[in-house]
Length: 257
Ligand SMILES: Cc1cc2nc3c(=O)[nH]c(=O)nc-3n(C[C@H](O)[C@H](O)[C@H](O)COP(=O)(O)OP(=O)(O)OC[C@H]3O[C@@H](n4cnc5c(N)ncnc54)[C@H](O)[C@@H]3O)c2cc1C
Image (spheres, rainbow, N blue to C red):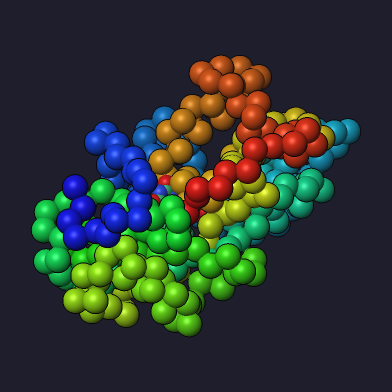
């Protein structure tokens, strides 16, 4: 499945032939087009700067384009979700953490397709994108923040982990201009926070997806729509993902990239 990978020290691996890739930009544009067809109005350059409540109910959001009356707010602000919640006086533990994506020049060392491959021992991940390889490794002591400059000092550690599993990576060249970094939106247990906020029930969280928000988007959209329209999610139970779990204890996901 993945040629020239070192497997001597592995006791097992998983492979899901139904997994796949999507182009996140096209996915987002698809949702946007459908939302507009359904009558959604999109306000651009309208940063939310305040959320006004009266008697425990939301009455408006105050934006750079003026105030918008509303009864419900869905907090889907990604790595800014903690800051948006704070505008309503709520604490939602989501912080931004930089993650780097290192991109190689086009290469033939892996002909054809390869699945996203994760070495769960080191956390190193790699996959093919067009004719190049993209790879990364989370930096455990990265401080939270919105810095998305590529971390070149971290590259050697990434490559060491990569060479150990894929020695032929030594044959490829980095395409420095294509490398990039973005922010994961991370919660204390690396799982998303979904659903109504107990202190302000018309404030609905849909954020904290770490590095999984694209693949979780269809299911998230469904249960958050149900949370708004039906009062609570119907299609599947989101109680383990509600913010209340931090009061009752939660499961820490370890093998996450
Ligand atoms: C390096 C990297 C690799 C990733 N790889 C994958 C992957 O392989 N698979 C996967 O499923 N996911 C992946 N992710 C995660 C995925 O990109 C996110 O989980 C997803 O984009 C979250 O989408 P979202 O719409 O919830 O939030 P975002 O895309 O972060 O959108 C939030 C929006 O809120 C806006 N906003 C913030 N504050 C305000 C405000 N005050 N007022 C108004 N608007 C505001 C922002 O401008 C932004 O447009 C990756 C992320 C990174 C950084």
